[in-house]
Structures are given as structure tokens and as C-alpha cells.
Image (cartoon, rainbow, N blue to C red):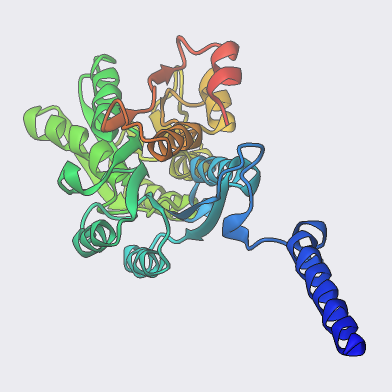
Length: 340
């Protein structure tokens, strides 16, 4: 009987010790495993990572796009509280397919710089149904404002109007324009083309020598300009919808010995934020550059952090600060401040 009693007491003690050991062992030893990525703390905040899908255009498209993409990648990091997936493509259909996949992957936020302003209705509806919040950056969509939570973008029609107003102020007797367009249907192309189209339609002294897309490509812009030179048609303005295409056009002028810029035979105009283009304007090789500010990532980050804290954006659409610069007024301080 005593033996049995001793065995029972011994068994109870073992079970009690095991229970105590089980209660304390988990915090002391994690088994060498790290938490899943979406459960890791965001910096020192102790919060879970916010999942974002970032759909942008090809960073090789232009210096503007390179800077824009780099800023987004530098901002949406795990150290800053995010688990981000990035996709770059200038093809709207590919962007849309990838956006649908990101929605299925249940990202918290879908950040879009759309290659085309149209064709996104299903994506917007599916995102809303899934609880994925959409923030536009860089470029707008043709969509009701209720379909996205915020937009941090350039005012492309204002960029075009500012440029055309500057050109009109040059007081030429006649405007014979080589118009080199960007990616057709993009917000940037529509805005920068729209103002010029209106002016050409309204003024008898404003004429298109040619109006063609180079799809943001420098070499194509050079070919377009060279074909006009070869045709012998007179022209005195090159209105290129980004700096890379303006540089391609200038290469054709230089090869043909045609002067350009301040005091030259041809006015050269570009857009974006490339430091080398600012320098071309500063030295008088170009006449004008419309600043398109690529640094929108910090503003988008702030909106997301506010939303995560339950605070709605103060504005639905936030335009990045921009302006036009010409060879008569640009300073080195401007180049250093705005060039990327």
C-alpha cells in the first residue's frame, strides 16, 4: 500500500513539474524560428507590416520614371513598416492583370501609376469588394473619385497649359511645330497634348509640321525629327513631351547643323525633372522645361500611415508642386533644388 501511495505521489509531482515547465518554456525558447513576414514589427512601432502592391511604369522609360521608381522602392520597405511587391510595365493590359493578382493576394493597399487612363473599371470594383484601398500616384485615371482613396499626382493639363502659355509669350510671327508625343492614352500625354491641340486649333499662325508619338523613346524622337529635316519643311519649335525625346530631337538638329535654344533657329521644349535637362536649359541649349515632380512617395506614405491610424486624407487629390523654367530665368539654385 505504501509503495502504491509513493508511486501516486511521485506521479503527481512529475505532472506538476511538467505543467510548470510547459508554462514557462515558450517565451524562453522560440526554437530558432522567426515570425512570419506579415507579423514582424514595423520598425519600433510594434505594429504589423502593411502590405502594398506597387504598380509603376518601366523605370527605363525616362529619368523621371527612374527617380519615381527609386523613391517608391526606398520608401515602401520593411524598415518603414511595409511588405511591398513591385511591378513595372508600360503595357496597361499587363498592369491590369498584375493588379488583379495583387487584389487576390489581399494586399492592404494597391498603389497605381497607370499606363493608360482607361480600362481599370473592373480592377477598381474588385479592389473595393475585397477591401483593398487604392491610391493613385503620378498619373490619374478616368474613374469616379469614390473608387480610390486618394491620388498624389501631377496636374498634367496644367503642365501643358503652362508650357503653351510660355510658348505663346515668345511672340513668334508663326509657330511651325514638331510635336513629339509620349505614350498615347497616358495621363501625361493627354495633358501635355491637350493644351497644344487647343492652341493650334484656335490660332491660324500655329501649325503642326508633324505630330507623332515616340512613346517616350529618345531614338524614335530623333528619327521623327530627322524625317522632318529631310522633308525640307520649315519648323521653328520642337515640343517634346519628355526630356528624353527632346534630347533625341536635339541630336538630329545638331547633326544637321541647325541652331537651337537661346538665340537659335529652333525653340526646344521638354518636360520632367532630369538634372541634365535643367543644365541644358541653364546653358541656353534648350529654351524651356516643364517640371514634373517625381518625388511623391513620402506623401503616399503619409496617407497610408494616416489611414492605418483611422485618419482620412485631408484632400482626395493632391497635386505635387510644379512649374515651368526657361533659359532666361533658370538659376543654378533651381537646378540643384529641382533636378533629379
